Length: 216
Image 1 (cartoon, rainbow, N blue to C red):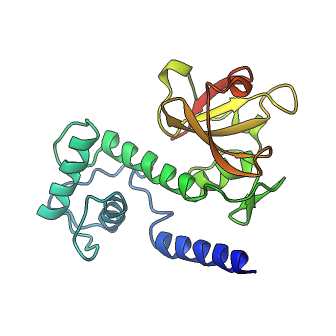
Image 2: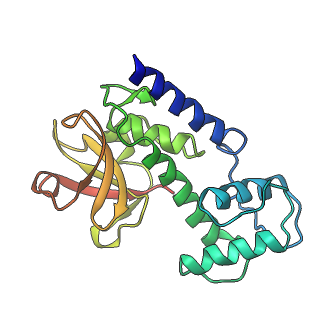
């Protein structure tokens, strides 16, 4: 009973944190944010930077002033991006990927449920679909259809946030997860009974890996 209450409280805190910016997306809207602007998407940017530890002002103002510019530049510098203090496509995409993967990691250890599509329980494609949908990216619901979405990526060119696919319970794509870097990926595992991190070098997964797609 205590565990159920604890899980409910975590989910409530999570959605409280996301309220107001989970569906806003300066990346998809192709808006370039720069010094001197006042825009609702600047609030989204400030929230995202705060979650990553770069924006330390006590509130999100919606004004792209010196503090926001300095936070953007610090972020760009830390991610080896062009340090210009402007949030264009490259910086926005990197922030978007980290925003998605922050959520993906948040759900680590959530139980596996066949057909599950919510924080009360996920199956593999329900997990990837939910995390992306909550960040304004819509992909098909099941792994075999997710395999047809996005852009093909070679294994040696995988990036943080790419989808990795495997053939497990049936021929073709029947399992999917998010790539984390260093040959690791996070996924809802039926074998483990929860969302876990695994290695692509694990013999089970390396023999069943069939491809990757980039959807962010």
